[in-house]
Amino acid sequence: MKKLFVFFLLFTGLSTTLAQDYMINFAGTGDTTVVATVRVDNLTSGATLDLNGDDLLHLIAPTGVGPDYSDHRSLEIFPNPMDDQALLIFTASKGGTAILCVADLTGKTICRLNTVLSAGRHSFRLTGFKRGIYLVTVAGDNLFLTIKLISENKRKGVGLIEPVSSTPTTGEEPVKFVSSTIDMEYTNGDQLLFRGSSGTYATVVPDIPVTSKTITFDFAGCMDGDANHYAIVHIGDQTWMAENLNTGVRIDGVVDQTDNGVIEKYCYDDEETNCALHGGLYCWDEAMQYVTNAGIQGICPSGWHFPTDVEWCTLSLFLDPTVNCSAVGWSGTDAGGKIKSTGTIEAGDGLWHQPNAGATNESGFTGFPSGNSATNGSFAYMGSYGYWWSSTEIGTATAWSRSPDYNSPMIVRGNNVKGEGYSLRCIRD
Image (tube, rainbow, N blue to C red):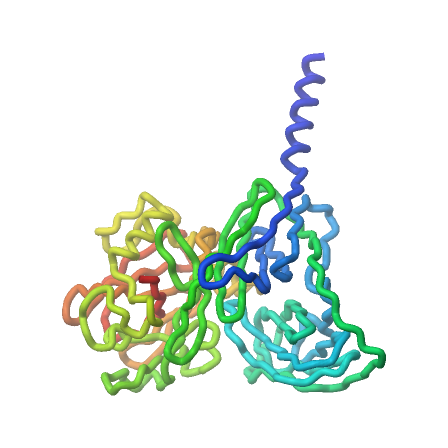
C-alpha cells in the first residue's frame, strides 16, 4: 500500500509538472503603451510564433503533434522552405494601401513593397533571399498578417517582392479585428524571448513563465543618424541595444576609416547584405568620433552612449557573478552563453558554428558572431566570434573589448588594436 501511495504521489507530481496551462497577455509602457505585434521565440525548442499585441498567448504542454504557428493569420508561402523563389498568397477582406515587408532575424528590413490592394486574393513572388530565416509581414489600414519564411538559397542575390496576380471580390466588408487566443507548445523551463513592436519601437523581453502573467514591454526610442531604429533590451539596471549598430557609409576594408566628418563602416567581406544582418564594423577611433573620453555618445543614437569597460563589467557580473572584470582573456562561467544567440549554421537555425557552447540568450542580448576586420583590410571569424568595443582605451594603440566565441560559454575581456573593425552596441544614458 505504501509503494502504491508513493507511486501515486510521483505520478501526481509529474502530471502537475507537465500540465502547463498559462495565459500570457501583453502591455506597453514608456514612450508608447500600444503593443502592435509580438514575436515569441522558444529558444529551447526552436519554435517561433507571431501574433497581434492584443492576442492572448496560451502556453500548453506538448501534445506530440506540433501545431502550425505560421498560418494562423491566413497567410501562405509556397514552397516554404524556398530555394530560388516562392509565392506569397493571402486574402484581403477590404481594399486599401498595404506594405509588404521581409525582415531578417534581427528585425532589419531586407526589402519592402508599398502597394494598393483591392478586396480579394493576391499573390506575390519572393526571389533572391539568401539562406536564412525571415519574417514576412503584410500590413495596412485593414490588414496585418505575418509568417516565417525559410530560404535555402545558397546563391547570392538581392531580395525582391513582385506582384503576380490579384483576384478581386465584390461586396467588400470591413475587416473585424478581435483578439484571439493562440496556442503554443511549452515545457516548464523553456527559455522564451518576446519581441514587442509598436511603430518604430521594439523591445525584447526574455522570460521563463511558470504561471499566467503579463509581459510588459518598456518602449524607448533608439534611432541613429540614418533613421535606423533598433530594438532594446533591459538587463539588470541597464538598457542595451538588442542588435548591432549599423549606421554610416560603407567603405571597402582596404580603405582606412578617417576623421573626415562622415561616419564610415565596414561590411564583412565588403558585402552590404552582411551589414544588414550583422551591423557595421567600426575602428575604435571612428566609433569614438576621434576623442578619447570614455562613455561619450560617439556614433551612438541620441540619448545613448558608447559603453565603458566598467559598464561591460556590470553586464557581465549581472549575468555571471564569477566573472573577473580585472582579468584579461577568458573569465567566469557562462556570461558569454547568456548573451549569444542560439542555434548553429550547420543545424540551419542560427548563425554560430557548432557547438555554440552554452548559448541560451537568456539575457535577450542576442549577440551574433559577426567577426572582425583586420588592419590589413581582411575579414575573419564570422560564425565563430563576436567582438564589441568598449569606450575605455588602454593606451594610444589599444582599447578594451568583449567577445564570446562558438566553442565556450565564457566571455573574453580583450585588449585589442584600435585599428581593427568591431561591432558596436550602445547603452542608454
